[in-house]
Length: 202
Image (cartoon, rainbow, N blue to C red; front, side):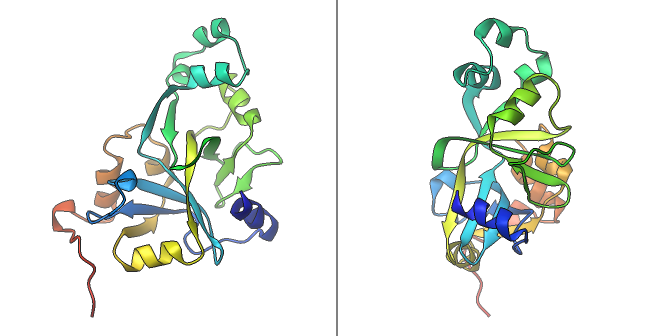
C-alpha cells in the first residue's frame, strides 16, 4: 500500500498515528458501527488503519494451512494459545491481505514502526514466527484494512463520525474483543449513553 511505503520512507509520524478511532453512534457506514480502529499511518495523502474489535470466521490454523506455512496435521498440533489466535476483520479494503500489529520486540526488514513500541508487519515471516513461538510478545492479526483518501478522515471526524484518543498496548492487544468498544470509551471517561449522534457547532 502506497501510504505505508511513504511512511516507511519518510520515517515520520502523522498526528493520528498510534491513535484509536472510535465510531460515534451516528456512524452512517454500517461496516464501521461500534468499531474501534487503530491508525497505523496518517499523512496529507490519507490514512490507513485496522479495525481491532471485529473478528473473522477464519481460524488462525486454517490460515496457516491455506498459506502453505504448515499442513493440516501440523496445524492440529499447534499449542492452544496459537490455535486460539483470533483473526480479525481489519476493514473493507483488500480483504485477502493480512496485517499483523505487534509489540516492538519483534522486527524484520519489512516491519513498519507505528510508534516507539508498536510495529506493523505484513509478510508471512511473522505468521511463521508466531506459529513456532518465536513471534512478538503481543500481536493481533487482521485481514483487510480501512483506508481514507486525502482529507477524508479529517472531514469524517469534523462531522462527528469518529472520536479519537491515544492508544494503549493493554487495550490494543488484550483478548476482550467483545467489550473493547465500551472499555476504550470508558478509559477516556465517556459514557455511551451521553454521546450525541449529531455534530455540535459553536
